[in-house]
Image (tube, rainbow, N blue to C red; front, side, top):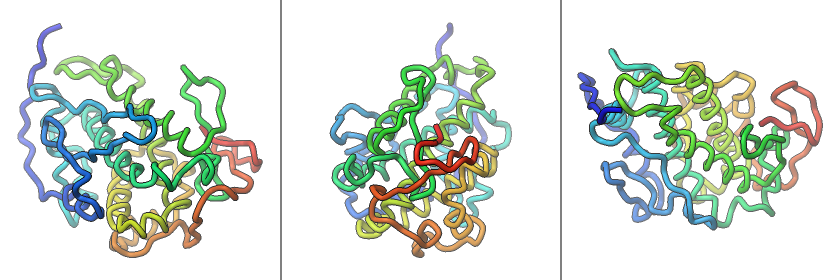
Length: 292
C-alpha cells in the first residue's frame, strides 16, 4: 500500500475553546504536549498500571491530520454549530477524530480521581449512582459480562478504546482506504462507553471535582461531548438517562459551565452504597442486572 497522502482541507480556523477549558484545572504544571503539539496530561493514565497512553493522533500527511486541528478549535459560544461536520469532509473521519480527542479529555478528567478518590473500596461496582450499574464485556477477551469495581472497569474500557482507535483495519489512515461496514457501530459503542465515565463522575464524585476546582472544566467538556453525540445520534436516549438532569441544564437550558450542576441534585460521595440497578438493555430492576 502506498505512502500516506495528506488530504487538503479548506476548513476555517475557529476560536479555541478546548485549551481555555483545560486551563481551569488546578495544576497546569501537570500538562505536557505530544509530538504534534496536542496538550495532554503528563499523568495521562499513569496511575497504578503505568501503561496507558493516548491513542495515536493522525500524523502529518495522513487523512485526518487537518481534522484534528479543526476539532481542537471549537467556536466558543456556539458549540452546536462547531460540532457539525465540516463542509466537504467525510463523516466517519470526523467521528473518529473526535472520538480520539474525547478519549484524551476524559482520560485527563479521570486522572484527577484515579489515584485516591475512586478506588475498589469506595466504588466496588461501576455505577451511575444507585440506579444504574455497568458490567464489562468486549466480546473478545471478556465475553461473559463481568461485574467489577469502577477502577477495574475503567482499566478495561480505556484499554479497549485505545486499542480500537489505534486499529488501522477499523480506522484506516490512508486517503482512499474505505472504512469497514461496522465502523459507525464501533464508534457508537466507543461513545456509549466513554459516556459512562461522565455518568460515574457526576453521580459519585462530583463533590470531589468541585473541591479540585475542576467543576467548570468538567461541565464544559461534558456539554461539548453531549452536543456532539446528539448531533450525530451516537448514543441511545436510554443510555443517556443517568444524566438526564445534567444534560437538560448544561445543553438544553444552557446553564453556564461554572454553575453547580449535579446529577439530578443528588450527589453521592461514593458508590459503595449503590442499591438495585436498572438493566439498560431490558429495563429490569435487579441488583445483578447490569448493562455492558
